Length: 277
Image 1 (cartoon, rainbow, N blue to C red):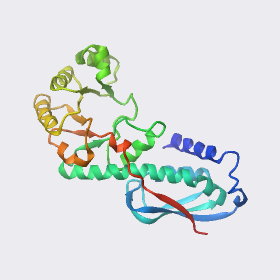
Image 2 (image 1 turned 135 degrees about the vertical axis):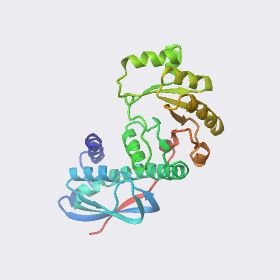
Image 3 (image 1 turned 120 degrees about the vertical axis):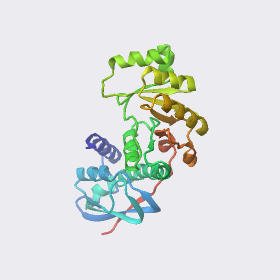
Image 4 (image 1 turned 90 degrees about the vertical axis):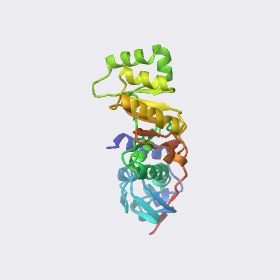
């Protein structure tokens, strides 16, 4: 699990090392121990399993006090031991991974928890607004936060968006043409910008209707109408969702709320590494 991600991070460390880390080279072969410290008051940690597997590649033993998805508090959260040179060349990259993933997990978890207090079965999902080359880390962090990853790639679900509709000519034709090649195990989702589009998508046989850029009141009203006529359909609300006001978007008939800001706007979680002997 995570083998390719780990391999890519190891490559990053080797590129960062360059020919040799001159500042650390005289310490090569010296056994030492270190600890990782959370400098924020608290956080939802993410990236533990990945970081541990990366450290194993450098023969560094690690022990974390928490698992991915758990809440941690300011202070020591892990101990490391191994060759001093390897510890030092890994330091910044592993801290960056923990900081990046924990920042996303911490933000997403806060939103998920607020939403589930109102509707326990609501799904708070990420979007495809991820940073190139780091999207997998972001999606994993969302999962650790208790959120929904949404599509991990284009083949996960056939999502018919505005440009598809323009090229196919209509929602009905788009669904019909896409269905011809789609496996029974996959769903079709249609992005709808108006009530008419939403009902056309439902009538055409879409499994999921995404209400795009609707206000909370508009979305709630339309979702109710859709569920009355098509109770089997999943309804996703997306586009312009303000996570600070997540409560306003939650209603009985909306199943999923996807938020781009889960992965595009995050507050940095700070970790440091200190040699202890």
